Image 1 (spheres, rainbow, N blue to C red):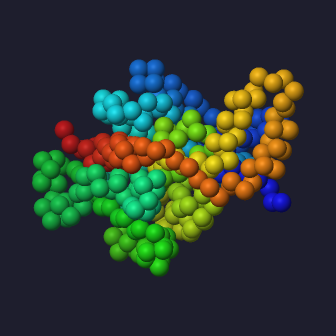
Image 2 (image 1 turned 90 degrees about the horizontal axis):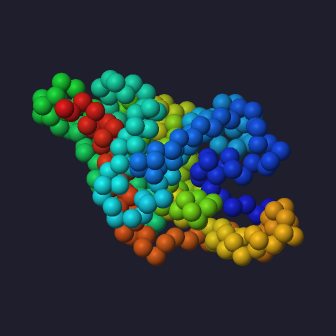
Image 3 (image 1 turned 135 degrees about the vertical axis):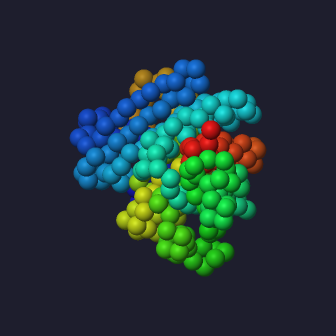
Length: 307
């Protein structure tokens, strides 16, 4: 039997999975902030070396995780606060944020699969400015500067017959953006982070990696421009759900050792490793959080030079 592994796209969870012996892993720095007023916890994981990247299973770079427990709730004011915090984190990772630039936003995923529709729905709510600025100039927005924002929804290879990376690379070559912002639904290891967490990273993204469906990566190395990736975990594998339930039931039993428990998972949960689960209200959640992410992007790059 092959090794059983619960998949995750979150660098924070990858860091948590490192054994106690490697808890002081060199080349990985972690900073945590808690914004009490908004009840938002921000954890920044910085991977500085290739050895640390290999141990973490993530590329060298910065990974910012925003945990907002009430993000699934229909509270518009709270979501506005999340968008504001997201905008701040985007601006910190965005190269040349003080200068006027061209930004291409790519919404990855399959619009017809609700849990995978985050990217396309974020694109639906963006303030697109590139065509207006190119036609009428920044005066159209009553300002002296305006980022040129364009968007792309490349779909999935089953429909297009093309790798997402091929489509995006072609658009990048034709439109010459200064930076890419890529949006995608992620997979989490913990049910507590499902639809409640936003990850922002400057390392780009490998579409489908969280569910074992590896596609060509979208990175600065492959595309020639900086790539910022934003994602929300919308699915967990079935083994995670079963494991979390058993852990709660057995956590009070003193004879249960963590190592033995993980060995039992490998034996009994391996057949669940290709099954992924999401919440029953995922359609409403995706609609809500996609708007939150799009507002964060709009605040960061579309409204930067607006008074």
